[in-house]
Length: 405
Ligand code: FAD
Image (cartoon, rainbow, N blue to C red; front, side, top):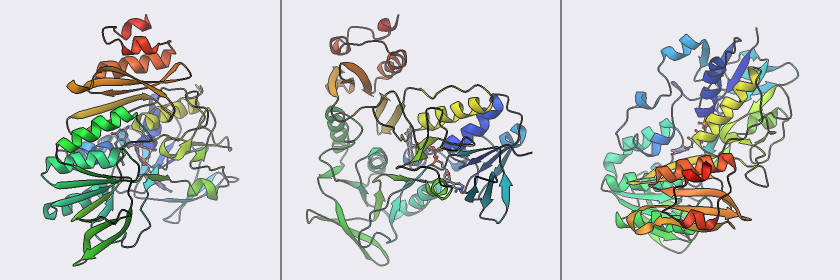
């Protein structure tokens, strides 16, 4: 009997399978992932796993017995290479084909690699998969100078792990500040200062134009400002490309992500898409958005599972995210845009504060540094649509939770 087939054994794909059973779905569930082993969490790859504090087994989402107990057929490593929408079948790299009643695309995203000379030299690595992290771990004993290309979340987390290991770390960032697309200038400055105090050197407003090697591996990084940095290891964190090829081949609309509606359905009512690969309409922003976070993948998976079990509602969760950089934990609730105003709550100097972002007079997002209570309150305020004024946000003596009452 054809049931649900999930393409992609990552955070979202795993969660669809698990949540379908929690919702009481009785049909067959097949989870197909092209990475070897069991589904695992990616966040530790740039944190504890890279620091050698977590083993491969500890980052697995569930132990091996879970899949048999739940009646989830896990095919891995196996790749879905085609979708025949008319016949409702997927083709596999191994040559087999499987029928589905409903197909969930949870194909995630892949790391973007700069197309500059020398980019294929050994010692230049992206960080997306456990295999990438393991390749890095294998190289680390011979590394003294680490160059990180890209001052985004992954780049900054890797830089923090690098300084913990006593490496010389340089971050090269195209923009004039770190995390420019995602956080206010104040939070960018705080996080960059914190890393600089730990010894990280930053090169802003410059890009890599070439890598060169010696003895068969990367040795130098050349930038558009004519700087030339020595490197034993280069970690590239310059963003991702959503994996949309399967959807495109199937003739589904794609626009920097697989286009889905408010129920996370593609143009084909028998196919949903979730997580890093999906672009969905949201009440938080004027235009449809593609988000890359654990929360987004997990909550979208739950939404699709509930629909397939007969309890469909539009997807409407408040986006949230976290990033650990050395001793600093950044948490973000909501989604900000470049023009949003920024109101400070708390004291930057003591390393605990939040920045409230307002758009057209309404709270749009809250960025919290080492302030978990602000973050939790922000998620609730955003979910409830509670009006918050900039004055209330700035008043650190006002308990945010009281606004909810
Ligand atoms: P993925 O987890 O990428 O899973 C997609 C899977 O599908 C992959 O295994 C892929 O290989 C597979 N696949 C693709 N095509 C096919 C095919 N045709 N056939 C079979 N399989 C296929 N988020 C946070 O909120 N906080 C963090 O601190 C954080 N840290 C991160 C650190 C790192 C290093 C990385 C890489 C990500 C981090 N994220 C973090 C982001 C978060 O992990 C992702 O948003 C989340 O994993 C997305 O889940 P997904 O299921 O959409 O995609």
